[in-house]
Image (cartoon, rainbow, N blue to C red; front, side, top):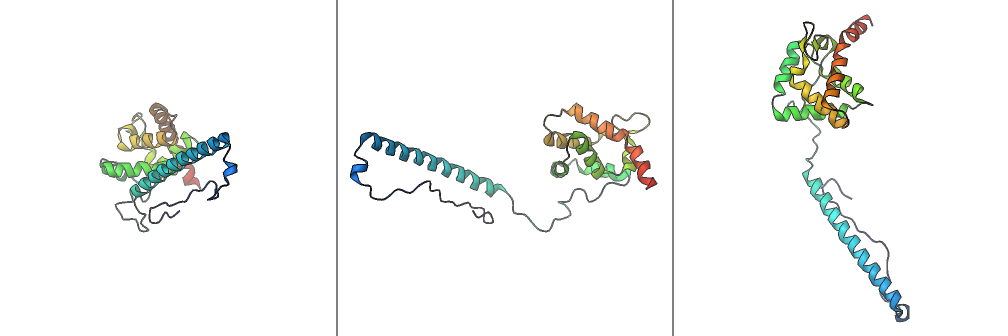
Length: 192
């Protein structure tokens, strides 16, 4: 297989038959039917493998080549936002579909063992605890509403990609819990 030039070539050989078979070996009609059935079966398998190979080649052609150097436009988030203004600026930039898609893909790559861990990782990469402590999910108790940010919908989508069994409401609850405890994480990090 050669993946660097996006072409997969393979030779499939299930068994080798002798070019010349003795006539007495195939003189039995049942044996001849078995051989013909086996040849037809191997032809079908080879045809199906050719189809799979063509599909793989088509998929490989769709994958863009990787660049060793990422441009500034490719990087959506270099470091967590350290102020509410930075977070709102980031949120405004996510109104562009391409940046929103890149951010969602980035957040999906963070992973986590469960939805709660994944949401906390995503939030930690997006903003510091100082910033997150100024938000609640719905904006209660004189805090800003995180659900009004595009980032909230992006995190919900990323979490649902990673954990398809979670509903949007469940992910919102996880975000609300993470935001609820952000002030406590902020204080404990200052003690260190």
